[in-house]
Image (cartoon, rainbow, N blue to C red):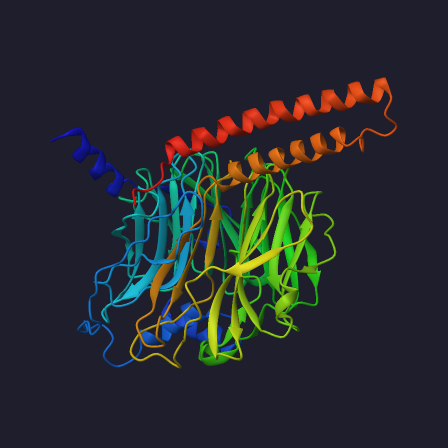
Length: 525
């Protein structure tokens, strides 16, 4: 047997070890357990509830014929100078692809993994869509079968990819890929719960979820070989995990059922925890869904994909105000102890309902966020991208999809729809960023997964251009005797030294841009 086949068998068969701090949590939930909690008023995510109910419908367990016309996927390769178009990355052979997440490999930026849940009427399956060429081509891989939720995805700095979801009746699990998403380990199971998400750094990963509805988490310090499960005491729905760049600090940010967004924090890799601390008071865990998707129930205002951390340890949260349905941003520079006054990141659409926020940050603190907005004039949905550079105060918003899209009412059969979230991710070192969501192009079933890959070198290009413009501005001011003021010999020397430093930085920026372009050449016309 070849080394490749041995490695492939190992990747598919190794099983992680899971340790529970609370031994009582090491149990799965039965259908009766779930029904009892729902009867008592437990809050359950829309997707989990839909799948739980679908399993009871007549006909479930029998494969259904595929009715969609199978068109070949059209790929639009990302152009290094401008953002690429959104592309449908889900396999046309799948009957649907609902509730999507995405992550990009920091060791290989051309390796991107998206994921979603599908169904053939017999069971729900979690799929990974893998590209190794920056989004030109995508391969469909089954990550898990018999599942209950969409995807949660993250790469660590070592290139391990973590895929979290729920399996076999609301059982949070995580599988790990060591080859960029092509093969996956056996699942690590964390006991009964709901609504998973994952973050990773180094060889550390942190999965957040709730136990319908007590908050909980699981973490690994060795790339997914062993896991520790920790239970909190507060109640919530929509859990966002974060791991600091030095791998020491863990954060669990969640929408509490007492109508506050809160945070738990650990300064020592999960050994001890503080909190909960209130981030945003008086914000309900869900808001009304505008438009035809209202059949899904409520939209989570802090779904778990809406939190980020930068290299300075600053925490960032993009949430939807449950009263105004506007996308609001707040941050903390002291490990979550205090938070900035929330600001609206999209004031141009002050009357449109925003839903399902997502957020990512690179190491420098440049932010990429997203939300879904319902355009009341067109009666259609749009996927928006909200961005802000670290050194800027204003947010910029533009449309990330290829145009407004329709969504039908309650889906037939065992379909889910948009789900409870969509996702975005950014490379730590800046450059490429990605976003993925589920969409219906014409308002009809089935839903499919779409992704957009943004310019691999735009960060370097922006810096080179900004330095060039600043040098030109200062040089013109010097030649016109506008600077320095006063124009003394000492000030002129300082001014020329400053220009010299800027020219040095500009030369370095040109080199970084050339290196990036050489690694990511322009596509042939």
